[in-house]
Amino acid sequence: MTASPASHDDSASAAGIDYDVIIVGAGFSGVYQLRRLRERGFSVVLLEAGSDLGGVWNAIRYPGARVDSHGALYQFTDEELWSDWDYSQMFPDHTEVRAYFDYIDSKLDLRRDCRFNTKVTASRFDSSTDSWTVETEPGDVLTTRFLVFATGSTVEPYEPNFANTDRYTGTLVHTSRWRDDIELSGKRVAVIGTGASGVQMIQEAGSVAEKLTVFQRTPNLALPMRQKDLDVEGRAKIKRSLPERYDMVTKTFGAVDYEFDPRNAVDVTPEVREDVYSKLWDEGGFSFWMGNFADTLFDAKSNAFAYEFWKNEVRRYITDPAKIELLAPSEPPHPFGAKRPSLQQNYYEVMSQSNVDIVAVGDTPIQEFTERGIRTADGVEREFDVIVLATGYDNNTGAMNAIDIRNADGQSLKDKWSDGVDNYLGAFTNGFPNLAFVYGPQSTAGFSNGPTAAELQGDLLIDLFEFLRAESVTRFESTEEADVAWTAEIEEIHDQTLFKLASSWFNAGNIPGKHRQLLQYPGGMPTYRERWTTERDSGYSTGLTLSSPTREPQPSMNLS
Image (tube, rainbow, N blue to C red; front, side):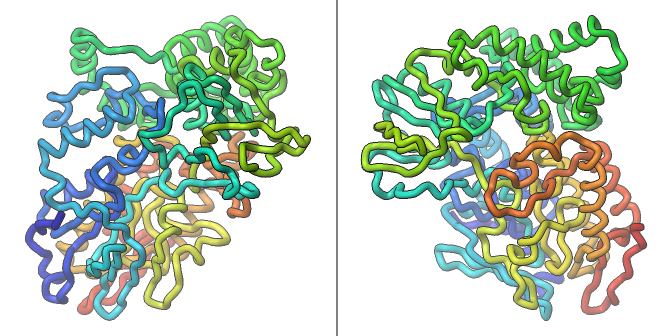
């Protein structure tokens, strides 16, 4: 599908540049940028490697895949869009999210300016024209003044380097590449991994498989989803609440419609703690994580209180005594909440079934794949018809590192970030002018509701582009000092928390050999917006330098 660009910015047209902005990625962030940039008269095209709108939701189709945010919040906040849309469940599945993208396209005609099945393979910055050249797998070469990567966090699948996977003759599939023709009913199934996709797959596979074997590295400290179908009355009630809820999400840490309890767990009585924990548990979703006492993610004693409550609640559902320590161990495998919890509907009941086995790979590692299945280090070979890799993604930087992005000096972004990510505002990085990324590394992505974060960061970035156009600026770039200061702020907050005590995709701990650092901004959405607002109100001179053929680079202000 070809794009129909809006009117060009004069400077881009005069320089022979195809577009003012090229967006890479058609998830929530990408389509929000596309809509708003078109409205403001920028010439823009969106390039998407997949076949349609939806980003990760166009790709993810495995059984049980669904969002972990309330559907009421998992949409854009524009009344023009939400007034005519309803999800059928509190936590919609992947098919409904794709239906939502179809719906917003029917309202906004987004596909008109998208090119699907167009994988960006390389991009180069040309300092003589202050523009990017973008190469795609179909062979198209496009130029743009500004390049925005809205590639998200869950794009590049991580597949562990197991020995002899090529020998296995059954079905081997990563959850991100699920095919509709894969049958689990009556089969001998293995699921490797117990993260979010693992929990969802296990719940589905356990109810239909003849035998399910779960290879678990770390117990998932999953929380009750409290899923429910929404009837007409329920949908109407939600719709009436949306204006107030959408106002609230702009003010809370995680861009959700609730906030941490301002009290400390160590300062209240055991009775008060139990009452608060019980209410949060009954509410379901992430309430027990992001609505808990303020010190839960900072103080080890407070965290231990939360874990003890979690353990006691979960053990009610584990009917196989041999599995209790595997699923809800006496001692926490890591501080509660230091990894993003998964939401479960009947995970612990399924894991307790007699047709489900658990292999703790910390004690009994996978040695190799065989022709018929998997052999573990104890010499036992288990035979499977289907092996599912629920091993997650190279989050945060994986999608951008898979593209050969190079600056005018030939340096690749992947090489620059190989020893650690430094960027500014989770959006810009020194040495790569006119390049921005949304919902990416060192932004609030992992700690916030996706669509809300997409709108916030999208609006702030578009404000920048409008300022540059009004001032006839053709080049912007973050300073090295601003990048270092942003990373230092993240690390300063990180060091005060318990996140540092867990190995997770938050800190690249899920990828062997990857540099360990917190790749999320842990200061919360209001503080994140405040940092951006400071930059904007300074005329983009705090951490950015601006220039054009007729304008000398403007020195940035001291960030120290």
